[in-house]
Image (cartoon, rainbow, N blue to C red; front, top):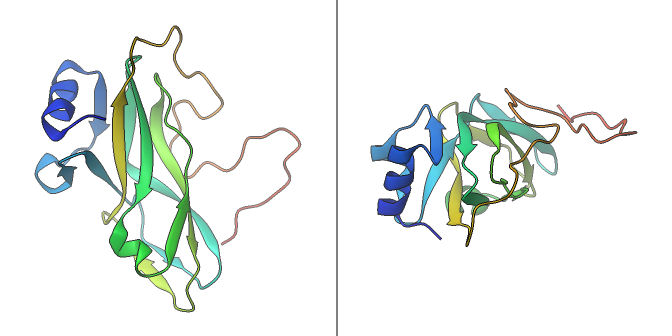
Length: 152
């Protein structure tokens, strides 16, 4: 797992790219807080797909995991997140579920998840090149034969 000083080193070398970034407000001792691209209201017992404000780009030596911020978890928000593979670039689409009985409002630019970076023991032979590469905004499932629609 990368520390704050290691994250800064990786940002300087370009092994990790976060745009736009706000190091002073979002860098943590062991991760970086990603922000919400647009305001959203999470209705009780419903989920929403939400895009990160930041575009994330990882080199072949780094992977990342996402964790919901504890302040949102305390309000009943849970998330289902995939691994961010080496070589990925784009905005991340997050699945946020409100398990509480009250609406939860998340404002544009609010910190919503922490991304935790891990350095691989050796560089990946090939980087991510899946159907979500270069994602912009909220991206629904691109799974074949999937007819499910996003709840709104």
